[in-house]
Length: 60
Image (tube, rainbow, N blue to C red; front, side, top):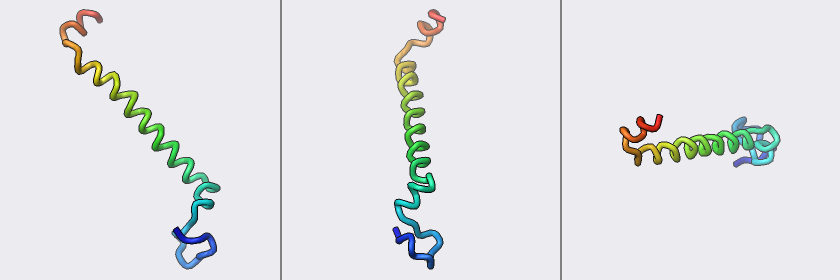
């Protein structure tokens, strides 16, 4: 990563700039919410795979 004083490359930035602009925290939130969503969907799906379809429908 380049320093914030390097203006030759407009895409070069440093960690402090990312944190103050909110890009890094927003990225962390997106990754964490995606992981939580995948886990929250995978756990019931794994339980459903083990069920017998006839028994599952009988209890509906």
